[in-house]
Image (tube, rainbow, N blue to C red; front, side, top):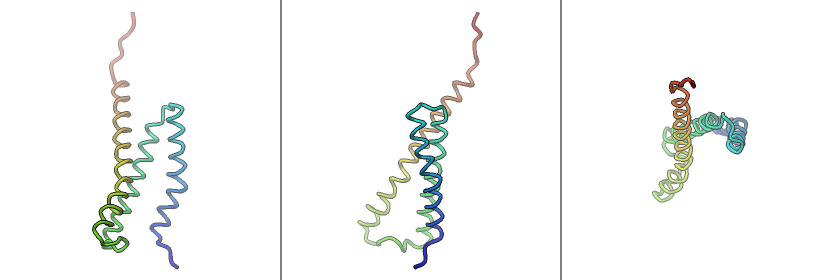
Length: 114
């Protein structure tokens, strides 16, 4: 049995980087740590990158690892795997919104107290 080098590499990164970073992000939110949205952005972007590589690799292979029946393909392969694109995408947008809002607040001119 020969393993797929791409899958092994991606899952190694998932296990050793994204898993622990996801846990740190969770802890950061529980503790209202100032870096929580930066961590959310990093983890979400990493997840989206992996998803894009997953779908692109499968598309380039001609969808050979997917059952060609329409119900399976659209409900299982696209629909359920699409959640792994939708959720990190929404979290990425949220992190960008939160960070931009914080930056706007930081950039506002300060009025001196008399």
